[in-house]
Length: 121
Image (tube, rainbow, N blue to C red):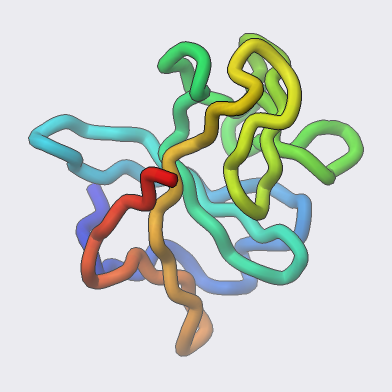
């Protein structure tokens, strides 16, 4: 289980529109699944749960992008999310958003921010 300040993965693991890196972290005493992806050259991370229902997004382990590789997709509901913001742009949760995690990319790796803050925009 990852903690604030932990290295999540090597930067090279995340390829634009490619397989995401799954991990878990503890929030309020509960284990929460999460993932990191790269979109437009930027590493981003989110809790792995749909804004509509609390189900994991990936349709196969680590597969978060739709066929076009432009959007994140919920395998259960087909909701589409903007990978840059986590905003739901199509589907039953339109107007909702994924819970963003703050990550830093440095020293050849992607790190969970020291603050451990979650961005609830």
